[in-house]
Length: 475
Image 1 (spheres, helix red, strand yellow):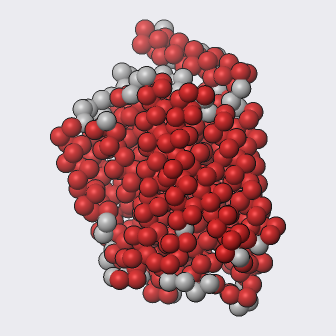
Image 2 (cartoon, rainbow, N blue to C red; image 1 turned 120 degrees about the vertical axis):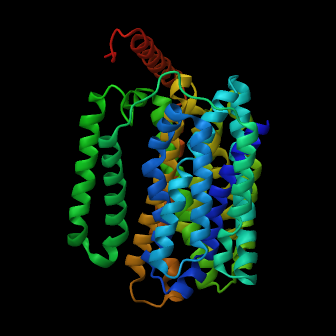
Image 3 (tube, one colour; image 1 turned 180 degrees about the horizontal axis):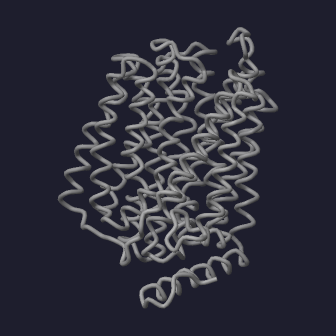
């Protein structure tokens, strides 16, 4: 339990950093004279680097030692937070957010790998992951309030200070109480695969964010680079004995489903926070503290539902939590898109509560499905793929929703056009929720479990063959 608590501390500072920053966006916009695209980059520069490096961090931790990589991540993340607090302009803030992300990439997937190797009983592991998910809910509940108080009393720069004591405490506790662990067989680095992942994520995000201002012709080369990088990954990775992304994982329907659900669920989260924060402060004219209070109807259900979801996964499996999550998130998106829920306090409250319930139930089944059934030696890589999917989803959610909003608002008065301009973005969130519902139903049945068992057998037999020196791959 102490190990779980220490790992949750790392998740807390990473998650809290995102929720606190969302509340501070309007203040950052005014102080640093940022455009909508600039605000998108303050969020997406972090999540983009995080998504690009998570799988490398997971495999590196399995090879060099999970405790060692975890401690390095805490140091880099804490230093990055300190630099963010003194950023003189928007470009520097974006650059320092990327430094934070380098450290963050060494925290969550490695912590999940430590938890997976600590809690070996499936039911205990599911409950531990439920507690892990509750930390996300805690960060959502505390983040807007803490962020609002700090922004109103001290200024937006102070939101990065809260990472410093938590990061230092987690570092010394890790040094004292967490034992070192490694995978039985070290995985070799895959620099080509890593470069292709960075090219794919970076070019795709740039094309989406910059399209409204630069035009489709200007971003077309970046879209081509993204497609070429994707094709390169699909061609190159299966030909490596120890790839950065083991595409055989995706033969498991539950694992593939968890990846899709993570992208959709966290795309909805990123877009939801982005639209809600701008609406509450820039349209309704609320200060950061009162905007943070308005986020509680979403944050509290997330906090309460996350451990319940973990217990349901441990006793009934992932299907029930995923169905609840999909229905609640879809209803929330439709309420905003079709009925302009933000224009009434009652419907705004209901929409926030529904989204909080949906997101609270979605996280535990993603993580549990991603690591269950996989060989323990590949727990770091499997957890990293799930974490990468989360961060990629949040990156794309902010990029797509922000691009739609910027394109529809244009030079029109912000307050007068925001609700109508945001409507397509809310429909995107409703589609994401519906995708969680459908994919969750399709990938949690008997057929899906059969594919997971066959995939686990192939991966385990490959490890046995590699250890015996017989051969590297099983067709």
